[in-house]
Image 1: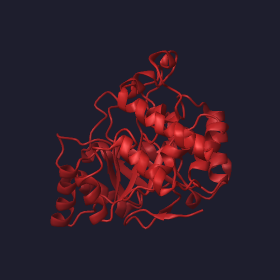
Image 2: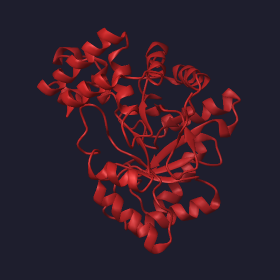
Image 3: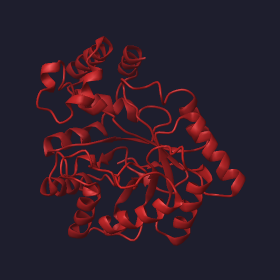
Length: 316
Protein backbone atom coordinates (compact mmCIF):
# COMPACT_ATOMS: atom_id res chain seq x y z
CA UNK A 1 0.00 0.00 0.00
CA UNK A 2 1.16 3.51 -0.81
CA UNK A 3 2.36 5.41 2.23
CA UNK A 4 2.26 9.20 2.33
CA UNK A 5 4.64 11.51 4.14
CA UNK A 6 2.78 13.56 6.72
CA UNK A 7 4.24 17.03 6.38
CA UNK A 8 7.30 17.61 8.54
CA UNK A 9 6.33 15.09 11.22
CA UNK A 10 8.73 12.46 9.91
CA UNK A 11 5.80 10.02 9.90
CA UNK A 12 4.43 8.10 6.94
CA UNK A 13 0.78 7.10 6.97
CA UNK A 14 -1.54 5.05 4.81
CA UNK A 15 -4.03 7.05 2.69
CA UNK A 16 -6.92 6.50 5.11
CA UNK A 17 -7.17 7.12 8.87
CA UNK A 18 -9.65 5.30 11.11
CA UNK A 19 -11.93 7.69 12.99
CA UNK A 20 -12.09 6.58 16.60
CA UNK A 21 -15.04 8.80 17.47
CA UNK A 22 -17.31 5.74 17.18
CA UNK A 23 -15.48 3.76 19.88
CA UNK A 24 -17.60 3.79 23.02
CA UNK A 25 -20.48 5.31 21.07
CA UNK A 26 -21.87 3.35 18.10
CA UNK A 27 -19.20 0.63 18.43
CA UNK A 28 -18.81 -1.15 21.76
CA UNK A 29 -15.45 -2.40 23.02
CA UNK A 30 -15.65 -5.84 21.42
CA UNK A 31 -16.70 -4.43 18.05
CA UNK A 32 -14.02 -1.75 18.26
CA UNK A 33 -11.32 -4.38 18.83
CA UNK A 34 -12.55 -6.35 15.79
CA UNK A 35 -12.55 -3.25 13.58
CA UNK A 36 -9.10 -2.13 14.67
CA UNK A 37 -7.65 -5.60 14.10
CA UNK A 38 -9.10 -5.72 10.58
CA UNK A 39 -8.01 -2.17 9.74
CA UNK A 40 -4.41 -2.71 10.79
CA UNK A 41 -4.30 -6.21 9.27
CA UNK A 42 -5.21 -4.58 5.94
CA UNK A 43 -2.03 -2.49 6.08
CA UNK A 44 -3.34 0.77 7.52
CA UNK A 45 -1.50 2.30 10.46
CA UNK A 46 -3.24 5.39 11.89
CA UNK A 47 -6.18 5.94 14.24
CA UNK A 48 -7.60 9.31 15.24
CA UNK A 49 -9.27 10.06 18.55
CA UNK A 50 -9.66 12.83 21.17
CA UNK A 51 -9.99 13.16 24.90
CA UNK A 52 -13.56 14.40 24.37
CA UNK A 53 -14.76 11.25 22.56
CA UNK A 54 -17.51 10.59 23.44
CA UNK A 55 -18.91 13.13 25.89
CA UNK A 56 -22.12 13.46 23.86
CA UNK A 57 -23.23 9.94 24.80
CA UNK A 58 -25.42 9.81 27.93
CA UNK A 59 -23.38 8.42 30.81
CA UNK A 60 -20.00 9.07 29.15
CA UNK A 61 -17.47 11.52 30.58
CA UNK A 62 -14.93 11.64 27.76
CA UNK A 63 -11.91 9.46 27.17
CA UNK A 64 -13.93 6.37 26.29
CA UNK A 65 -12.42 6.13 22.81
CA UNK A 66 -8.85 6.53 24.08
CA UNK A 67 -9.48 3.86 26.70
CA UNK A 68 -10.67 1.37 24.10
CA UNK A 69 -7.69 2.08 21.83
CA UNK A 70 -5.32 1.60 24.76
CA UNK A 71 -6.89 -1.72 25.71
CA UNK A 72 -6.81 -2.87 22.09
CA UNK A 73 -3.15 -1.97 21.62
CA UNK A 74 -2.16 -3.83 24.78
CA UNK A 75 -4.32 -6.88 24.01
CA UNK A 76 -3.32 -7.07 20.34
CA UNK A 77 0.34 -7.67 21.08
CA UNK A 78 1.31 -5.23 18.34
CA UNK A 79 4.46 -3.20 18.82
CA UNK A 80 3.80 0.38 19.80
CA UNK A 81 5.58 1.73 16.73
CA UNK A 82 3.24 -0.20 14.43
CA UNK A 83 0.41 2.23 15.24
CA UNK A 84 0.26 5.98 14.76
CA UNK A 85 -2.08 7.45 17.35
CA UNK A 86 -3.54 10.92 16.96
CA UNK A 87 -5.41 12.49 19.85
CA UNK A 88 -6.52 15.97 20.81
CA UNK A 89 -6.83 18.40 23.68
CA UNK A 90 -8.96 21.48 24.21
CA UNK A 91 -12.60 20.44 23.98
CA UNK A 92 -15.00 20.99 26.84
CA UNK A 93 -14.88 18.14 29.37
CA UNK A 94 -16.67 19.90 32.21
CA UNK A 95 -15.48 21.25 35.56
CA UNK A 96 -13.06 23.68 33.92
CA UNK A 97 -11.31 20.98 31.92
CA UNK A 98 -10.98 22.64 28.53
CA UNK A 99 -8.86 24.98 26.45
CA UNK A 100 -5.20 25.21 25.50
CA UNK A 101 -3.57 26.68 28.61
CA UNK A 102 -0.26 25.18 29.67
CA UNK A 103 -1.81 24.06 32.96
CA UNK A 104 -4.56 22.08 31.25
CA UNK A 105 -2.41 20.66 28.44
CA UNK A 106 0.11 19.27 30.94
CA UNK A 107 -2.69 17.56 32.87
CA UNK A 108 -4.68 16.45 29.83
CA UNK A 109 -1.72 14.76 28.16
CA UNK A 110 -1.08 12.65 31.26
CA UNK A 111 -4.74 11.64 31.30
CA UNK A 112 -4.62 10.66 27.62
CA UNK A 113 -1.37 8.73 28.03
CA UNK A 114 -2.89 6.81 30.91
CA UNK A 115 -6.03 5.90 28.98
CA UNK A 116 -4.02 4.97 25.89
CA UNK A 117 -1.60 2.89 28.04
CA UNK A 118 1.38 4.32 26.17
CA UNK A 119 4.45 6.43 26.88
CA UNK A 120 3.93 8.78 23.95
CA UNK A 121 1.37 10.20 21.55
CA UNK A 122 2.43 10.35 17.90
CA UNK A 123 0.49 13.51 17.02
CA UNK A 124 -1.13 15.76 19.62
CA UNK A 125 -3.63 18.28 18.27
CA UNK A 126 -5.13 21.49 19.55
CA UNK A 127 -8.76 20.53 19.00
CA UNK A 128 -10.26 24.02 18.74
CA UNK A 129 -8.90 27.57 18.85
CA UNK A 130 -8.78 28.97 22.38
CA UNK A 131 -9.31 32.76 22.38
CA UNK A 132 -8.44 32.93 26.08
CA UNK A 133 -4.92 31.50 25.76
CA UNK A 134 -2.03 33.11 23.85
CA UNK A 135 -0.72 30.90 21.06
CA UNK A 136 2.78 31.22 22.53
CA UNK A 137 1.67 29.59 25.80
CA UNK A 138 0.16 26.63 23.96
CA UNK A 139 3.20 26.10 21.74
CA UNK A 140 5.54 26.39 24.74
CA UNK A 141 3.60 23.58 26.44
CA UNK A 142 4.04 21.43 23.34
CA UNK A 143 7.73 22.30 23.33
CA UNK A 144 8.00 20.83 26.83
CA UNK A 145 6.09 17.68 25.86
CA UNK A 146 8.27 17.18 22.78
CA UNK A 147 11.41 17.53 24.91
CA UNK A 148 10.01 15.00 27.40
CA UNK A 149 9.21 12.57 24.58
CA UNK A 150 5.54 12.45 25.51
CA UNK A 151 4.45 13.64 22.06
CA UNK A 152 6.20 13.23 18.70
CA UNK A 153 4.52 16.05 16.79
CA UNK A 154 2.06 18.87 17.45
CA UNK A 155 -0.78 19.90 15.21
CA UNK A 156 -4.11 21.68 15.18
CA UNK A 157 -7.69 21.17 14.14
CA UNK A 158 -10.33 23.66 13.04
CA UNK A 159 -8.01 26.62 12.38
CA UNK A 160 -8.66 29.00 9.50
CA UNK A 161 -5.85 30.40 7.36
CA UNK A 162 -5.40 33.51 9.51
CA UNK A 163 -5.17 31.51 12.74
CA UNK A 164 -2.74 28.99 11.26
CA UNK A 165 -0.57 31.76 9.82
CA UNK A 166 -0.46 33.43 13.23
CA UNK A 167 0.58 30.18 14.92
CA UNK A 168 3.35 29.60 12.38
CA UNK A 169 4.59 33.16 12.81
CA UNK A 170 4.71 32.78 16.60
CA UNK A 171 6.65 29.53 16.23
CA UNK A 172 9.22 31.23 14.00
CA UNK A 173 9.54 34.36 16.12
CA UNK A 174 9.82 32.58 19.47
CA UNK A 175 11.75 29.48 18.42
CA UNK A 176 8.85 27.21 19.38
CA UNK A 177 7.60 24.05 17.66
CA UNK A 178 5.32 24.61 14.69
CA UNK A 179 2.06 22.94 13.90
CA UNK A 180 3.10 20.25 11.43
CA UNK A 181 -0.37 18.86 10.74
CA UNK A 182 -3.85 20.29 10.32
CA UNK A 183 -7.20 18.57 10.66
CA UNK A 184 -9.90 20.50 8.79
CA UNK A 185 -13.45 19.52 7.87
CA UNK A 186 -13.45 18.59 4.20
CA UNK A 187 -15.65 16.56 1.88
CA UNK A 188 -17.55 16.88 -1.39
CA UNK A 189 -20.21 19.05 0.28
CA UNK A 190 -18.01 21.04 2.69
CA UNK A 191 -15.24 22.41 0.50
CA UNK A 192 -15.10 26.16 1.02
CA UNK A 193 -13.44 26.32 4.45
CA UNK A 194 -10.36 24.37 3.31
CA UNK A 195 -9.96 25.13 -0.36
CA UNK A 196 -8.31 28.45 -1.15
CA UNK A 197 -6.08 30.27 1.33
CA UNK A 198 -5.95 27.50 3.93
CA UNK A 199 -5.01 24.76 1.47
CA UNK A 200 -2.47 27.05 -0.19
CA UNK A 201 -0.88 27.77 3.19
CA UNK A 202 -0.68 24.08 4.09
CA UNK A 203 0.94 23.23 0.78
CA UNK A 204 3.36 26.15 0.97
CA UNK A 205 4.40 25.37 4.55
CA UNK A 206 4.52 21.57 4.07
CA UNK A 207 1.81 20.93 6.64
CA UNK A 208 0.25 17.47 6.54
CA UNK A 209 -3.54 17.51 6.20
CA UNK A 210 -5.77 14.80 7.67
CA UNK A 211 -9.35 15.85 6.95
CA UNK A 212 -12.41 14.85 8.97
CA UNK A 213 -16.09 14.24 8.12
CA UNK A 214 -14.95 12.75 4.81
CA UNK A 215 -18.42 11.26 4.32
CA UNK A 216 -20.27 14.32 5.64
CA UNK A 217 -21.43 12.44 8.75
CA UNK A 218 -22.52 9.52 6.57
CA UNK A 219 -24.58 11.54 4.09
CA UNK A 220 -22.23 10.82 1.17
CA UNK A 221 -22.72 7.09 1.65
CA UNK A 222 -26.17 7.59 0.14
CA UNK A 223 -27.84 6.18 3.21
CA UNK A 224 -29.73 9.37 4.04
CA UNK A 225 -31.89 10.90 1.31
CA UNK A 226 -34.86 12.26 3.25
CA UNK A 227 -35.76 13.38 6.74
CA UNK A 228 -37.51 10.06 7.22
CA UNK A 229 -34.19 8.27 6.72
CA UNK A 230 -32.83 10.13 9.75
CA UNK A 231 -35.41 8.73 12.16
CA UNK A 232 -33.69 6.65 14.83
CA UNK A 233 -30.19 7.45 13.56
CA UNK A 234 -27.51 8.47 16.05
CA UNK A 235 -26.20 10.90 13.42
CA UNK A 236 -29.56 12.34 12.42
CA UNK A 237 -29.10 15.88 13.69
CA UNK A 238 -25.77 16.37 11.97
CA UNK A 239 -26.91 15.10 8.58
CA UNK A 240 -30.02 17.25 8.22
CA UNK A 241 -28.16 20.24 6.74
CA UNK A 242 -27.05 18.16 3.74
CA UNK A 243 -30.62 17.34 2.67
CA UNK A 244 -30.90 20.26 0.28
CA UNK A 245 -30.80 20.64 -3.49
CA UNK A 246 -27.02 20.77 -3.66
CA UNK A 247 -26.68 17.69 -1.50
CA UNK A 248 -29.10 15.77 -3.69
CA UNK A 249 -27.22 16.79 -6.84
CA UNK A 250 -23.96 15.55 -5.35
CA UNK A 251 -25.60 12.24 -4.44
CA UNK A 252 -26.98 12.04 -7.96
CA UNK A 253 -23.50 12.18 -9.51
CA UNK A 254 -22.17 9.72 -6.91
CA UNK A 255 -25.01 7.38 -7.89
CA UNK A 256 -24.09 7.68 -11.57
CA UNK A 257 -20.40 6.97 -10.99
CA UNK A 258 -21.28 4.09 -8.65
CA UNK A 259 -23.44 2.56 -11.38
CA UNK A 260 -20.67 2.97 -13.96
CA UNK A 261 -17.78 1.77 -11.80
CA UNK A 262 -19.31 -0.78 -9.46
CA UNK A 263 -17.88 1.11 -6.48
CA UNK A 264 -20.06 2.34 -3.64
CA UNK A 265 -20.90 6.00 -3.16
CA UNK A 266 -18.86 6.22 0.06
CA UNK A 267 -15.82 4.71 -1.65
CA UNK A 268 -16.05 7.24 -4.47
CA UNK A 269 -16.47 10.18 -2.07
CA UNK A 270 -13.38 9.15 -0.09
CA UNK A 271 -11.33 8.41 -3.21
CA UNK A 272 -12.15 11.95 -4.42
CA UNK A 273 -10.64 13.37 -1.21
CA UNK A 274 -7.55 11.15 -1.46
CA UNK A 275 -6.93 12.55 -4.94
CA UNK A 276 -7.15 16.19 -3.82
CA UNK A 277 -4.04 18.32 -3.82
CA UNK A 278 -2.83 19.11 -0.32
CA UNK A 279 -4.67 16.28 1.48
CA UNK A 280 -2.55 13.54 3.04
CA UNK A 281 -5.47 11.33 4.12
CA UNK A 282 -9.13 11.57 5.12
CA UNK A 283 -10.57 10.19 8.34
CA UNK A 284 -13.48 7.78 8.08
CA UNK A 285 -15.29 5.59 10.59
CA UNK A 286 -16.97 2.21 10.44
CA UNK A 287 -19.14 0.36 12.92
CA UNK A 288 -19.13 -3.08 11.28
CA UNK A 289 -16.85 -5.17 9.08
CA UNK A 290 -18.93 -4.60 5.95
CA UNK A 291 -18.50 -0.84 6.27
CA UNK A 292 -14.81 -1.29 7.01
CA UNK A 293 -14.30 -3.41 3.90
CA UNK A 294 -15.80 -0.57 1.87
CA UNK A 295 -13.44 1.96 3.47
CA UNK A 296 -10.50 -0.28 2.61
CA UNK A 297 -11.64 -0.51 -1.02
CA UNK A 298 -11.77 3.28 -1.21
CA UNK A 299 -8.01 3.47 -0.65
CA UNK A 300 -7.47 1.30 -3.72
CA UNK A 301 -9.99 3.08 -5.96
CA UNK A 302 -8.56 5.31 -8.67
CA UNK A 303 -11.13 7.65 -10.17
CA UNK A 304 -10.86 8.70 -13.80
CA UNK A 305 -10.16 12.33 -14.60
CA UNK A 306 -13.63 12.54 -16.12
CA UNK A 307 -15.29 11.25 -12.93
CA UNK A 308 -13.27 13.67 -10.77
CA UNK A 309 -14.30 16.51 -13.06
CA UNK A 310 -17.99 15.66 -12.71
CA UNK A 311 -17.67 15.56 -8.93
CA UNK A 312 -15.74 18.84 -8.92
CA UNK A 313 -18.42 20.54 -10.98
CA UNK A 314 -21.45 19.32 -9.05
CA UNK A 315 -19.91 20.11 -5.65
CA UNK A 316 -18.12 23.35 -6.53
